[in-house]
Amino acid sequence: MQQRSSHYRASGLVLCLMSVTRDITERIRIEDSLKQKERYQRALLDNFPFAVWLKDTESRFLSVNTGFVRIFGAKDPAELIGKNDFDIAPHDMAEGYRADDREVMASRQNKSVEELILTEGERKWFETVKAPVLGDNGELLGTVGFARDITERKATDEEIKRLAFYDSLTHLPNRRLLRDRLKHALASSTRSGKPVAVLFIDLDNFKTLNDTLGHHVGDLLLQQVADRLTGCVREGDTVARLGGDEFVVVLEDLSNALYEAATHAENVGEKILVALNQPYDLAGHPCASTPSIGIALFAEPETTIDELMKRADVAMYQAKDAGRNTLRFFDPEMQAAVAARVALEADLRDGLEQAQLLLHYQVQVDGTGRVTGAEALVRWQHPQRGLVSPAEFIPLAEETGLILPLGDWVLATACHQLVAWARQPETAHLTLAVNVSARQFRRKDFVRQVRTILESSGARPQQLKLELTESLLLEDVEGIIAKMNALKALGVSFSLDDFGTGYSSLSYLKRLPLDQLKIDQSFVRDILTDPNDAAIARTIVALAKSLGLAVIAEGVETEAQRAFLASAGCHACQGYLFGRPLPTEAFGELIRRA
Ligand code: C2E
Ligand code: MG
Ligand code: MG
Image (cartoon, rainbow, N blue to C red; front, side, top):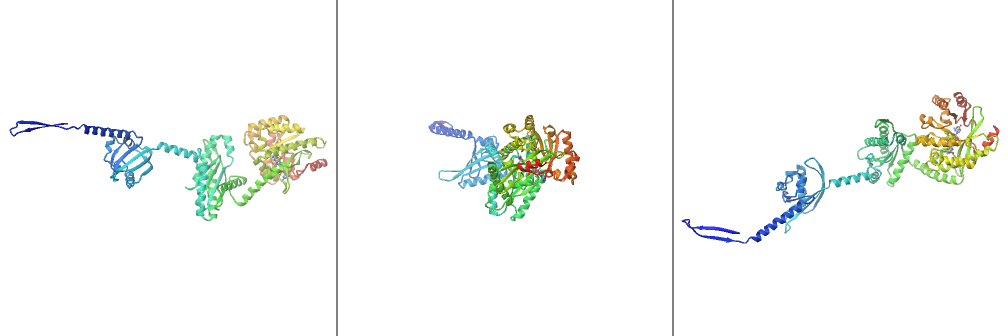
């Protein structure tokens, strides 16, 4: 660097020229390198995928990177220098930042996750880290901060959580979240002594709706049920979907007095009954649905989640047994009944293996009183309990699948009985009706099974009549018709048992290759005194006639009942008036005497 100065005399004449030259190469070099360093630092900061800022001890911005500018919406970083949070953020937010800075300057690192509404109204989530900046001697110079946009990660986390803990159809908590909530509820109940109530809710006949109107409509029903359930409980209570048509409601913070807690649970249950009984509009399909509700209360600390759920489930089945669309409480007597059922199942398994089952035969007569055939009715000769009625063990056998080996045995025994009768002139003409449960009939190889038994026993198919029930028609009617036709081709005939008590769809009835309708004994019992029963019996007879089917009445106990039925056009009968179900020997005896 050269500096020139001229020295003048008073006269203004230049005397001499002085020139000083200083070497500043080093300074320029240092300055250049500093500038370069700054540029590097700038580039480093600006290319950071975070917002970065430096503040002084008064929380004024000393420096910000372009990331910060981008996120918080200024034009260029220089614009923000010297400003503070109050200049760029709403007042309450700025106050929060100021408080954070103070905390950081008290030499603690501060980490937070927060949701921000940006200038364009866009919502974003940020993870922020702030730290104090200290001088060489440990004096406080200001703070440094980083903010990272985690909106996407947050959304993914939320989605993962939603999938793991919520049912995707109804958005209710799923089984997993329910267990978690129950765990907390039971723990706090144990501390506070306040009971927790669990309501198990199952929709009646949901399967039928799903099968007839389609899964899409079924889904709509489930969604509307979920909304209605949520509307029946307080905030803080849980409504969850276990899957299928099963929902669970957990009521917390109930009264310490067990009776009051139970009353509250019952009131909520009643409210749910009313709400779910309202008509539904499922994408234009008007529809009705009802629930069965089981309620269990948690009051003793030793009860586990599984026990509690099981109890509510047991109570729900009690509600189903009581005719559905109702609610039931769990009580210890129920539990005893459950235990007895488990024992009965084990016993029945043994009973099947140890040949404790036997068939009784009940006569069927025509209008002249002549015996035309019999119905085979299974009995269980239990070593301790004595003779057990099928009404007690058939439903259990159906539930457990034992009905399959049991049904095979009944069918085989009945066919052998037909062969034995064929050898005696007085019994050779008899037909034998055998009850076939829905589950048994639905099995894939049922037709082959019957054919094999007929062939191996040598029984005449024309003398075998299978009694089906309406419950069979709840699913896959086409498949059932096909099976019935295959069996009919063998010569076997069909009777529809307990007709009128179940799901009587006339359109199906027309298409089924049936031979006979059986008027249920519940209509016969009061046929003389109850005009409704009399009308139903008459209607069934007329229906059978118009469909070209035979008709038989069961449970005929008196001559007056028989006469009434005959006057209505039903001549074939079965009932105590003609004979009780009897063991083989006694049945043979009855026929010989007749
Ligand atoms: P179901 O097929 O409707 O049989 C008629 C029931 O009415 C029989 O009861 C019979 O004993 C009873 N009964 C007959 N006449 C009279 C009467 O005059 N008055 C009264 N009060 N009752 C009468 P049971 O033997 O207890 O059988 C009950 C049900 O168990 C049967 O009803 C049937 O659904 C089922 N069942 C019986 N045996 C079998 C079987 O081998 N397989 C299957 N799957 N179910 C069976
Ligand atoms: Mg029957
Ligand atoms: Mg019947």
